[in-house]
Every structure is written in structure tokens, then in C-alpha cells.
Image (cartoon, rainbow, N blue to C red; front, side):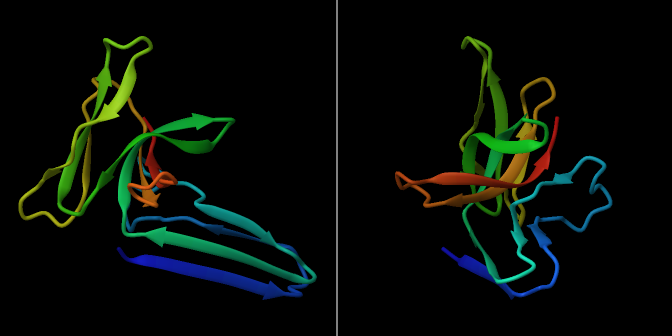
Length: 149
């Protein structure tokens, strides 16, 4: 597994500076039907020392996203995904309330991307991000980019 760490440090900047890290794909659909979210945010102080550490892994995952408290996006149900795989988001209508879930990822021949399909029959927010501590008790999903509804 490839893990990458970024560390931003500052000393006596003179002004408070807000640093926001987000992932934005090179596409004309950015802010049309693809919306980046703030992945990591901090304010670096005008005086003294400040730092921000950001870690991401090669463990990608798709998430059914939920928006609450305005624009906060959190991971709902999610599934790990590897390059060259596809998964479908489904809605279990037999549960009360209905529950979103992902199919087991399947290989796509000759494809070097990942694919998520909305199979719910209606609008659904889908996000992609990083899974830390995969298959461990501390596993967590951090959404980096979302396609709302």
C-alpha cells in the first residue's frame, strides 16, 4: 500500500492564512456536476508556528454521501474499490427506513479507472475518497470528492 504524507509548516507569516486542501479533477464538469470538498483545512497563525499534516493512502473507496449542517459531507455506507473495478449503489427498499448499500466490486476488463454506478432508481450522492487502516478496527473513510444527487 502506498501512503503519502504532506506536512505544511509556517513561522511568523504576518497574516493569518487559511490553507485548504481538496482534490479537483481536470474536467470541464467541475462545479457543474462534480464538486470538490475541503479534505483538510487549517488556519496558519500570523505569529508563532503552525502546521498541517495530511496523509492519504492508495486504498480508494466509494461512499454514499450525506450532507448535513449546511455543506459538511460525511461518509455514509462505503466500499473499498481498486483501479479497474466497478460497483453499484443500490437501495434496499425492504428495510425500514430504506438503506443504501454497495455491490461487491467487479473487474472491468481493459479499464484503468474506477467506476461507481447509481442503481438506486433515484438521485443519490456519491463520493470517492481514501480508506485508512483498511480491514482494521480503526478503518475510516475520508471523502475527497463528491457528485451530489
